[in-house]
Amino acid sequence: MFNRFKDKLKGFKESVATKIKEKSNVNGVVDEAPIPEKSLSKPAPSAEVISSEDTKAFVKAEASTVQENSSKGGFSFASRAKSLIFEQEVVLSENDLEEPLWELEIALLESDVALPVAEDIVNTVKGELAGKKKKIRTDTGEIAEDALRSAILKVLSKNTFDIDEYMERAEKPVNIVFVGVNGTGKTTSISKVAAYLGEKGYSVILAAGDTFRAGAIEQLEVHANNLGLKLVKHKTGGDPAAVIFDAVEYAIAHHKDVVLSDTAGRLHTNANLMDQMRKIVRVTKPDLLIFVDEAIAGNDAVERARLFNEAVPIDGTILTKTDADAKGGAAISIAQITDKPVLFLGVGQDYPDLVKFDPNWLIDRLLGS
Ligand code: GDP
Image 1 (cartoon, rainbow, N blue to C red):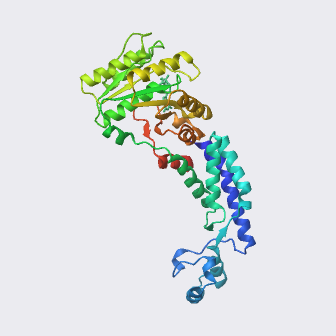
Image 2 (image 1 turned 90 degrees about the vertical axis):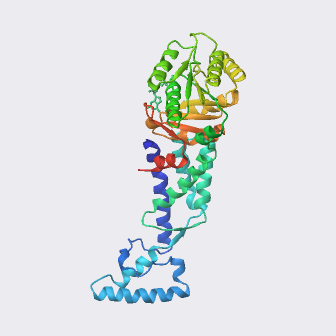
Image 3 (image 1 turned 60 degrees about the horizontal axis):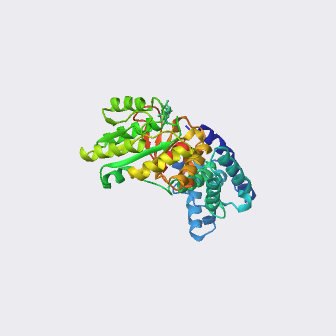
């Protein structure tokens, strides 16, 4: 998952690490591994602290420890002194960061992160790093990674939605309509959400609102049978708004909690199907209109979501096929670009392969090993 994204970011991390090393050398820091923990009587202070009064006492105490170690054949005073300086802090200027940030922006764009989102992330990373004291650790790449992590987390945390909290509070039956392009995983996602809500104890009805495509009703029927759910359907070619309306009526009459409705795959450019969409919204008044698209489509998925949201406002997105996505750009960008939350990520072809969107879960996979 997201392997190309991780690869692309290597250049940025290395570039920051190189700058830190350059800076450290200019400032006279000796680039050497610290001595083992157990020989330290207390943690070494940062280089800044070394000049202060109380550090003289520290150095004196350390000197006697070092002498003791030396007489036992341990570390020399010289190597001890080097390790003291090792924990120095570094301050990177905007100038130092120019090249690494350029590399970061290119890496993000090549990973299909939308331009405004990439710029946002780069600016946050700049704000995190420029002019701030950073402790130099053994792994200099960590400084870059920490800054990147908080920048992406900031983007991902802007639009969130807790479906469980929503379901708990919502008046029943909840009418959820799914829209999107054919083949992106809409029907599979409806079934996964049905299984997810069923697990939580909600009673679910499915509605075969894709009356346009031959075979769509049968496809949903297979899922309904697998999951033991009632499916409300009309004939192919019927009015989808009427199917969904009937399903909601059925749910009211039978005290069911939620109706999940399929609709025909469409693009925002298909005028007839978009009119049909508006009719569904007018007649059945969905509580949630969920746009489904595939993470692997990258920028295309983000652009479709944006245009769709302009035509018929959506309440959120489900991004499918995240398991097969190497780049991660759509998952990072789609919520910010639509200003609507991502509800779930599809991570496989089976019913349990659905993850409730969690910024920390995603960032661990984007940046993790
Ligand atoms: P629809 O035309 O949008 O309703 O798409 P389908 O639900 O029929 O799915 C199209 C294909 O994508 C099927 O082969 C699904 O098994 C597959 N698919 C759906 N969601 C995921 C996912 O999260 N991961 C993977 N790897 N495949 C998925």
